[in-house]
Length: 77
Image (cartoon, rainbow, N blue to C red; front, side):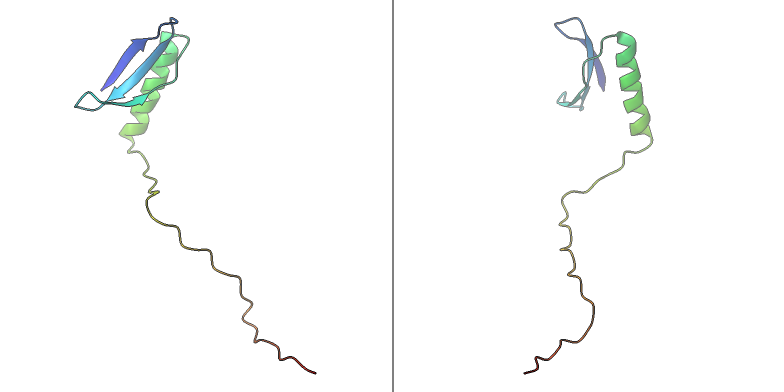
């Protein structure tokens, strides 16, 4: 659910809450109610498109060492 708020300094912001009323997102503050509406409508559009998931829990593979596949040279005396 998106909840619209007035801040103490007279600006506007919105929060997104879960079904258990826990706040998931708090927006930046906006100078105007129209600015706030643009912000939450943009968020609604992005969510309806299905947000992209960036899985940061998986370890990235170690970078491969550069090899030139040339045989090692023998030392000559």
